[in-house]
Image (cartoon, rainbow over the protein chains, first blue to last red):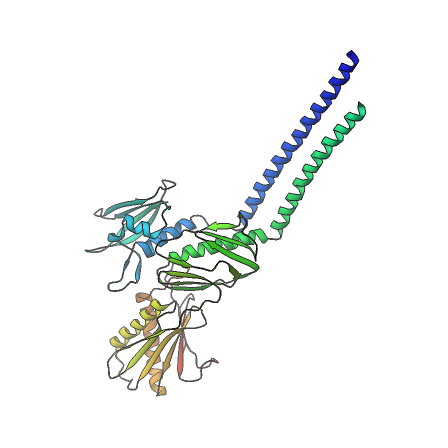
Length: 150
Length: 276
């Protein structure tokens, strides 16, 4: 019984050791595989990089060129980079993007006479992108700043 | 007992080796796809198309754009706000896609799948159309201006992608002629503005009776077009600098010119060149 007990312990020890080794192999393989996948995805991403802030620039361009842009009198031709104060509304932003897009817009004239704020949805960050624009008011066109948070 | 132990060892070893082999095969397959550039190209095409849609939605004027490259046996699938690219007939893969930001202001029209072969993108007013071999409906509008006795008639394609540009340009011609007068023009003249070859070039067709009058009018147009285009009809291009560049050319030597004098204005170069 004593001898058998020793052999049984030896077998169990061997199997336990093999199981541990197999687990180690699996874990190491899995980690290496994940590292490989991450490296490949990073490599692929680097092959088709999108310039920094390009997508944000396009969003802001949509605002300054189309959605908030003033029009030439008597036409529907947009005046790029000239913001119509009457268009800085939640309704304009709602129509500019689909419902789930978060956006905050602040429009301030250099003389501080105009200070508008409007927002739709929830923005991901508190970072503001700043654009120097002209503001079309009933009294004329004045310089100002458009701050957009996405 | 030793035999049983041996069997256990082989079993575990083979299982481990099989798993490692499976991982290696998967990694090789992924590496092969990446090195063949199929996946990167799909991702590139998806990103580029999505960014182009966002660009069209940020452009105030009408746009006609032909994608300047082709990807053999690839197709583009657009679904609400996602652009995906795959091989023809295949289902889109999870990672080969990119998002654009749809707008409630624009209507986006596209087929179920678009072959990635020099496909076209139009923005006409608030309608954006994406597909292959799209042609706008050819509808010509006319307007007559200047003094009644000179009978200058300008026609432009009211359905073309550059309708706004052409109409604005015709207004520039009108304004400049009114400013400068056209005493030398006595016969009926027609100026037709038309897009050529789906490119960023449009042509002024100028019908005339008298050769000398034609040249006189052409010279007058040549003198005022650049300034007026710059100040009254800004054209968006990829540069942030003032942009419109005009290649003003006598096209009488071109093959498609069979009658009359034709003047071409090419938009898009880096600076104005004037020929005549």
